[in-house]
Image 1 (tube, rainbow, N blue to C red):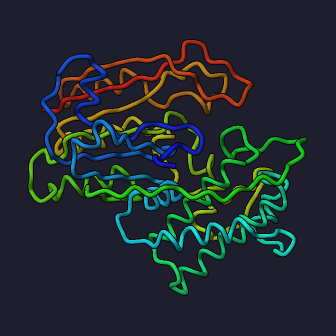
Image 2 (cartoon, rainbow, N blue to C red):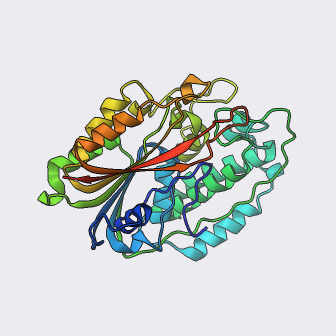
Image 3 (cartoon, rainbow, N blue to C red):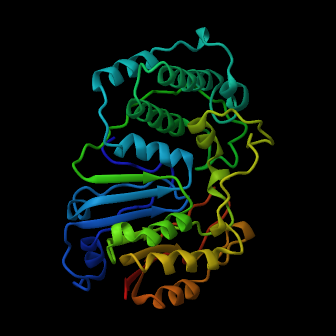
Length: 354
């Protein structure tokens, strides 16, 4: 894996000025310079770093995500710390040779076996997860190696999961075969400066505005924000990946075996508009450009799938901070197979802040 490819639904989390010019088919923004870029994903799915276009126009990236699983994977790919590639490969071979018959029942096989994975696969997944904590505690692997291996486990487990694209439910009446293969991610080595956070985006930007990033005005060239669109909390949708990342083994409930709610996003609730306004207002003080993606799922039969913000609300909030451009694209809506959205579109708002 050379890039970060989404576990399920993927969105690009990196847009530079060159990308924006390509979208509009005209040079509406200034020429790219070697400046900071911020990447903000508020509880998004995993993103993909475009290394061929905008990536080379910037020397500093800031990544923020609310989910533990996404934070883990960003560390695995982007944390610029030393690691022993031979050691990582040796552990991959060791984990791939595991015999489930010699592994005792564990938390993951008890709760997720014969639901999201076969019993044997879930035993192996649980064994590897516990073993990673043991190795990190014993300092036989460093933090970068830990994140590479844990990210690889997340991808390898998700690849075979018995789901429709998320972990809100699993497919029933299916014979689950043993399919687990432990595959390594390919970490990205770069001379770029990369900062990785797991914070509430509003709080993080408020702090950055207060410090003015070393008192520079408009120190960020481009900010990309991709807020949740509806009331479906990402921490609930991807609870299994969150549990696997933290390995805190919480008490689980219901058919889907979910823990108690946590990491609840304001963007999935009635206060989404006010949260967005607060974020954009602060961001406009430190970023030259703001890019926002949203869709038009307003007529879904399920109330929980309907958008929390109106497109006009987004437009007006961004217009209050500068000149905006709006682009729309036909986009296949995510569906578990029971719903067919007609005229579904993805919208990209680009604001050149004052």
